[in-house]
Each structure stands twice: as structure tokens, then as C-alpha cells.
Image (cartoon, rainbow, N blue to C red; front, side, top):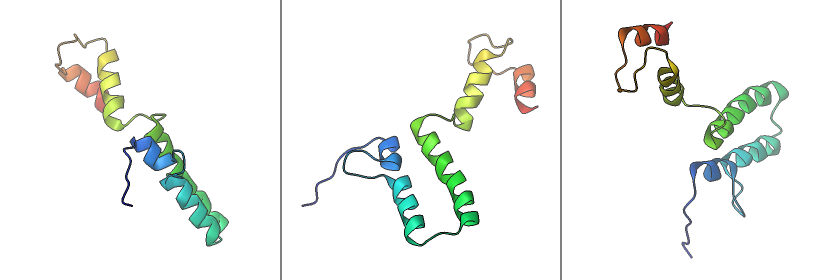
Length: 91
């Protein structure tokens, strides 16, 4: 049967129920090919980053910028990014 199921990005990346998730599948593949320690360490950094981003544990650049602008003392809750805010954002 061609059954399919709707999943959130975090579920696709990290797994849910019987579906293991793409990141765990990558780890299983690295284990299967007996990935060397140096390569594994580097790939693990990327896979950890992807997993955390998909779970919402790490802000996207856009989310970080929105948070920064909203918290800036010059921001007036009017959707206008002043020159001062833009300057501080780019420092």
C-alpha cells in the first residue's frame, strides 16, 4: 500500500513511532560503513546542528534577527528598523 502520513519537520528529521528519522538513519549508515573517527566527528557536528534546528533548540538566523530587533531599545513596535537598529544588528 502507498500509505503516507503527515509529519512535522522535527519528526521527519529525528523520527516518530516506527519511522526512525533521517538523522538516526545517517548515524546507522555511518556505523554500517565503519566511518573513521575523524570523519564521524565532523559529520556528527552537522547532524547535531540539523537535529537541534529541527527541534527548535537553535534559532534560525531570521528568528534571531527578529528577537534582536524586538528587544532593541530603539524599536517602537511599529515594524520599522531604524538606522540605529540596523547598525547595531550589523556590528
